[in-house]
Amino acid sequence: MPAWLAQSEPYVRLGVFGALFATFALWEVLAPRRAPALPRRRRWSTNLGLFAVDVLVLRLLFPLAGVGIALLVEARGYGVLNALGWPAWVEVVLAFLALDLLIYFQHRLFHAVPVLWRLHKVHHADLGFDLTTGVRFHPVEIVLSMLIKFAAIAALGAPVLAVLAFEIALNGTALFNHANIRLAAGVDRRLRWLVVTPDMHRVHHSTYVAETNSNYGFNIPWWDRLFGTYRPQPKDGHTDMRIGLSSIREHTGLGGLLVLPLQPRGQQVATRHD
Image (cartoon, rainbow, N blue to C red):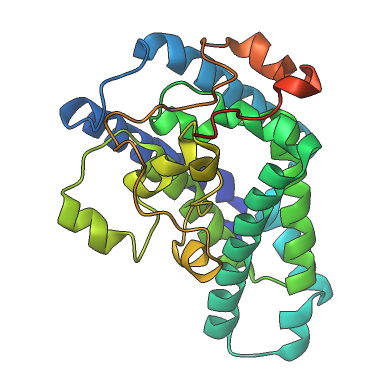
């Protein structure tokens, strides 16, 4: 991988992110899947404000990011793939798949462990569902996720190209599968064999606990089918389903989201089981 590309990684990711954000934002205006639950300005200011906090925290704590760790691992020969010495393209594909599988299980972990759910519920407490939901995460969850990713990159010996491709893909699909966009039923049915679609992931944001605990994938859709967590459609249909958590039915501002994990334990779970 050219050194200039690795050094330009933040700008490459930012450029792709900006282009995709603009594309999906326009798509949401032209062909929305659902009527907005709240005024866009109100939700976007909160979600994008939290995203800005996340970016600032990551840049302060981890200036090297994932690509920087991959470069260090490559230079020192750490990790399983560096020891095996397989063809470069095989290592890139395997590392990409392994990192995506890690994100799937990490997501399940953040639902299953109460202290981690306290953090992750910030993502699920959004009363709406659009592309800004895809960047709405508590900064402590983002830091923990980055540390897990660093450990995985080092253990795998993930190639720099695989890490860069994965980061770009994950950012892009997080915007796509949270976007409030309409896809033809036939297109969605075929596409969700290749990537997690908005209709597939929207089920995960239902207030029904059984639906919240399904469709964990962000990027590759195969893991949910393989590990038995796939749910094709929401019980109440996409236009009538309730989004968010039953325990939180009012919009929470930026300050409230930052302290949301500190709420009393009894308020930390979704309660609509029917």
